[in-house]
Amino acid sequence: VTDIEFRSDVSVSEVQQTGSDSLVVAAARVSTRGLAEDVSEPLSARDAGLIGFLMWNRHASPFEHGSLTVAVEAPIFVAREWMRHRTQSFNEESGRYRELKPVFYSPEITRPMVQVGKPGAYTFEPAEVLASDAELAVAEVARHSWAWYQDLLSYGVAKEVARNVLPLATYTSFYATANLRNWLNFLSLRSAPDALYEIRQAAVEVEHIVQAHWPASYAAWVDNGRGQL
Ligand SMILES: Cc1cc2nc3c(=O)[nH]c(=O)nc-3n(C[C@H](O)[C@H](O)[C@H](O)COP(=O)(O)OP(=O)(O)OC[C@H]3O[C@@H](n4cnc5c(N)ncnc54)[C@H](O)[C@@H]3O)c2cc1C
Image 1 (cartoon, rainbow, N blue to C red):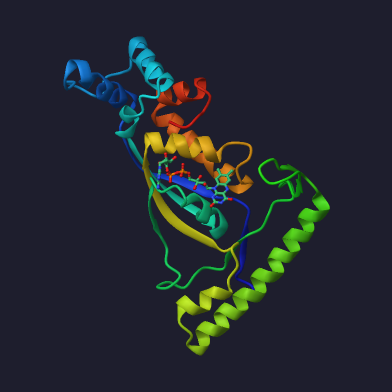
Image 2: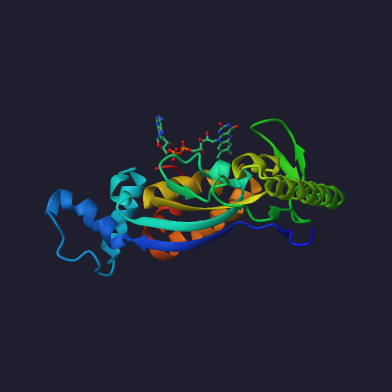
């Protein structure tokens, strides 16, 4: 089979974003001042201080008005972890209605490969020899299973049955939408050192997008220890 593609990345791209730090401030101040005339005004030092106060005291609801939708391409084992975040909204490509593409995850040679320790306290160490073994195994399984997938489809087997021969390393694609509070919670869990290496790569991309749109909220979250809200 010649058309198989191997990737080691998770791609995250911004689709749509609403709300700003100013909306966080307006949402908090409606409590004492009523509705703001303009929620797009530049942030003052006092506003930034209010955001810090909200974050420190975990007054989290003002962070729920801004929204971000991202488009993700990831292997199924990453998507499966990602979709445990129930407070996000998802739509994913279907293996029942669509023929899947021959794109598979293969670990980079630098991916930490050896698991040391016990559940809940693992550390990972690089091992280039093992990384080559894993790369070879992934490639062999991918080629073999893709050939079977194509054969089954050509015999007339339904896509929803034929797909079952494909590995967790097969790429999928989906949209994920959440509000700012939920994205910060996602980052808190998925950029932590104990998170899966591949979802951490994705979290880095999400973090850049969040920081760009809500710089003051993001800074306050970092200053307060990157915890859950
Ligand atoms: C390092 C790591 C290891 C993990 N290992 C495992 C594992 O071995 N097995 C496994 O099954 N999962 C595992 N998970 C997944 C984890 O248990 C969560 O399902 C996942 O991180 C989503 O977090 P969340 O529930 O906070 O997010 P969301 O589902 O987005 O929920 C956000 C918040 O909403 C509230 N909430 C949502 N739903 C409920 C509810 N039903 N009841 C009460 N409050 C609710 C909670 O406050 C929650 O924190 C792991 C996660 C991490 C980061």
